[in-house]
Length: 173
Image (cartoon, rainbow, N blue to C red; front, side, top):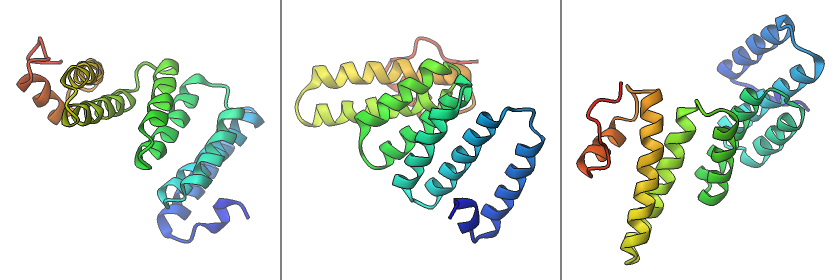
C-alpha cells in the first residue's frame, strides 16, 4: 500500500492532498514527479520515525531525481536519519554530498559543524586535546559558512565562536 494511503492524521492527509495538487500542476516530466512522490513518502515515513522505510523512499527518489538542488535535500534528509541514529560518519557523508550539490544549504553546514563539535568534545574527554582542537576548528569553519548564509540563525554557534576566539568578525551580516 502506498504511504499516501496509510496516513491517518489530518496534517499528513492535508500535506498529501496539497502535494498531489502541486504535483499535478507542476510543469515537470514524469520522472521528476515520480521522484517527488518518493521524496514526499520518505518525509512522511521519517516524520513517523520509520527510518528504514524513509531511507528506501529517499534512495528511490535519489535514483530518479535529476535536479541537483532537489538531490541535495534528499541527501540532507538521509543525513538527518543517520545522525539521529548515532551514525555520525554516515551522516557526515550525506551532509557533505548535499553541500557539494548545493553549497547554499546552511542547515547541512550547521549539522556538519555540530557533529565535528561533538566529535571534538569526545576526543578531548578521551585525552586527545590536539584532535579535539582540530575538530573544533573544522566545526568553526562550517559554522562560519552557515552563519554567513543565515545570520539570524545558529545563535549558540555564534556565541561559541566568539567565546572560543574562533570568530574574527563580530557581526556575520
